Length: 222
Ligand code: 5RP
Image (cartoon, rainbow, N blue to C red; front, side, top):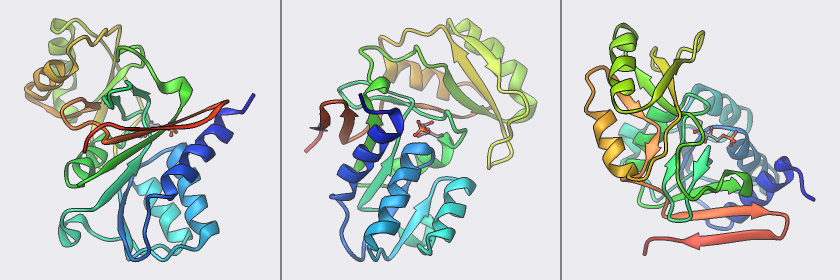
């Protein structure tokens, strides 16, 4: 039986094979991505640089001496690699457990290919068991929470957490997301919402899942 850390490492190693020397890489946030950064250090690949999705990842990139690039200067990216909190086999995701969802979503949107790396505990048939993170403007927190109740969820304020953008997080419990793309649009439509951590409209292009039996790579979009 592999530990979850060992599985994350396997997924990161599999994603590494998609990198090329001189590339600009979009890079996510979390313990799975940290495994990838460790692999980048060990293999000594020379990237042109990386666009980071969080202060936490930026610090790790600095320690690894990987140049950090501004997305505004970098333009569209060839590749974005990130983890997820839940993933369907069709590449739809819940993200934002590390509160980095907004920058992650921006980088995903600006990338031609999004490879999501997860251990097999994250794969579900229907999204929603993991509480769905929503980043909100602080003054709109209670208003947005009431609207989310109206959509059938049970929002809980992640107290004490301030995102890298200075905002609050609501985690929405008790969802069963049969129609995730519609739900994503509905939450995005609430005034005061910055981002919802539902990646249904722009999901992963490739899903790499590591389990006890090794790594499975699902190529979902041409
Ligand atoms: C951060 C994220 C992460 O990708 C997600 O929380 C998975 O984290 P980990 O790799 O530590 O399990 O969305 O906002």
